[in-house]
Amino acid sequence: MNEKTFWDAVLADLQLNLSELNYKTWASTSYISEMTENTLTITCPNKFAKDQMNGKFLPIVQDSVDKISKKKMVIDFEVGDSKREAEQNKTALQGTPIFESIGASAQKKKNGKHFGLNPKYSFENYVIGSHNQLAFAVANAVSQNPGKQYNPLFIYSGAGLGKTHLMQAIGNKIAETQPELSIIYTTGEAFTNEFIEVIQQSKSASQKSSFKKKYREADLLLIDDVQFIIGRESTQQEFFHTFNELFMKEKQIVLTSDKPPSEFTNLEERVKSRFGQGMIVDIQKPDLDMRVAILRAKRNASKENVSNEAIDAIASRVDTNVRELEGAYIRVLAQAMSDGVEASQINEDFVKHALNGIVKEKENKPINMNTVLKTVCSYYSVTMQDVKGKRRTQNLVVPRQISMYLMHELTHTPFLTIGEYLGGRDHTTVMHGVRKIEDQLNEDLRVEADVKNIKSLLFA
Ligand code: ADP
Ligand code: MG
Image (cartoon, rainbow, N blue to C red; front, top):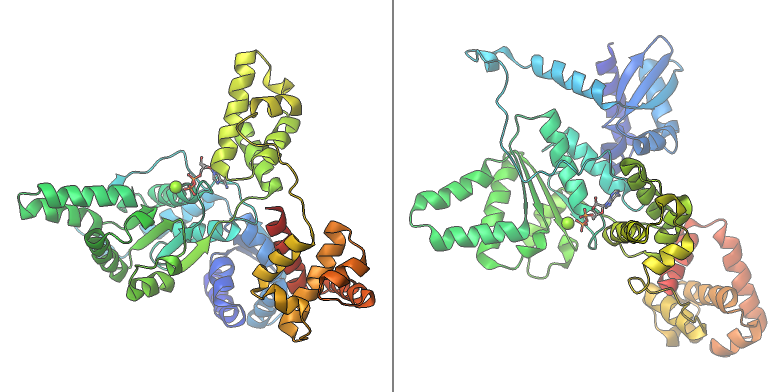
């Protein structure tokens, strides 16, 4: 059995033992780079895939490998280098069926048209963290296998969190590895304007059809901020025709938006379900560590001599989104330049002064029993009355005990007072509730996640 057949067999087995999402995202994008009698090196497309395969999924992978090889293999994982992949792609291209090259004296395939790509956005300069790791992994998979695995890919998030960057990175990567493909990047707004103009000004049918042709001949269509199109009757229809045609031809479509398809009220059900057939991923706000990582990457790329202290100070003040974070960083640097301060001398006080008026210094929002209860109730969709009431169904007991726990921890109110506030309960009941949650925090991931989420709502 050669490497490829062997790995295909392992993948087939993994497909049965992993969830579809995990299989597609982590396993199917890996390949064997080296195989000896008793060892196997598996190359993963990025560090996250490697961590997943070598961590959580290792027992499953090991099982499959041993089963197929009928012996105990030692597995090693590594992150693929793109040079090697490019080499592999080249050989793969050279190996295309002969009839394709018959008569093609020029041999080389013609480059496709590329519209709207901006080379400044790449996967290499995209910093990955828990807030965007899935979106990154899926985007990366799409760039390696356009039109096959995740079609359409729908990425949504609030503003400034990296949608355009990721979408452009897909385009740039494919332009590099498969230059013969036609790639169009446009925004929902530009698409709409172009369409309206074509309708209004076209004297001939041919102008209209050239608009249609342009989009329908794309191999990769990237539409950024598609929310601009949704809801505009005729543009939406034109977009959907294009979408359908490309989809049928297995051409890759990537869409971004400020909200998930399910939240578009005036989007037809059939369109929603089409979107859902592919992959829908979101990008969350980066946490403090991520914001620091992003600024450090920016500093290192531009070789500015900014201290970590300065970066920490900026990252801890700007928590809205990456765009504003970068804006603040640039502002601090500009201020330093105009004040004649060396970048390396920027300290926390300087940052504070440079960003004065731009970001509000955080005043700690007072947290009291009432805000805790309100937040817990809205998190679990139960009423305050019910939580204070006597019923002891599971859907009320958990919010009740979590309220007790958070009131105790965050407001330092005595058990007695918490009990009174929560519908006249005994202080021992409160004590018991608090202990219960404390215990569960170490054992129950659900409770741990809930407490973390509620706290972040409280501190938002
Ligand atoms: P969106 O399209 O979601 O509004 P953008 O993709 O335009 O956001 O991102 C805003 C800015 O932040 C861009 O300059 C982008 O390069 C940068 N950015 C966002 N996320 C990251 C990241 N994870 N790593 C590096 N830069 C990022
Ligand atoms: Mg954008």
